Length: 113
Image (cartoon, rainbow, N blue to C red):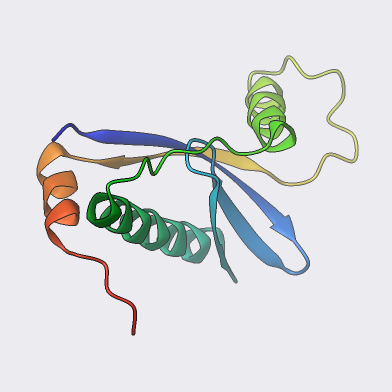
């Protein structure tokens, strides 16, 4: 199994933080950015396990507007955005799993309660 690296955009919405994985169109939410990222990691691992069990592709890109948020946020960080006025707080992260971690995820069969 190969290592895995996913892009995530983190933004506030309705009083919570949302972490959205661009390559899998999965989200995690939480009271803090860290909590949203933890939930997203857990959701990605569950999806990978389920996809392996069902022999389906776990990768489905997020909608275009979410992809654009990634680009706009990174441009703003680089100082290339047209205006920072009234811009919502957003950040980007890479979520990474080593090849060993990915193999371990695949060996844990997803089970519904």
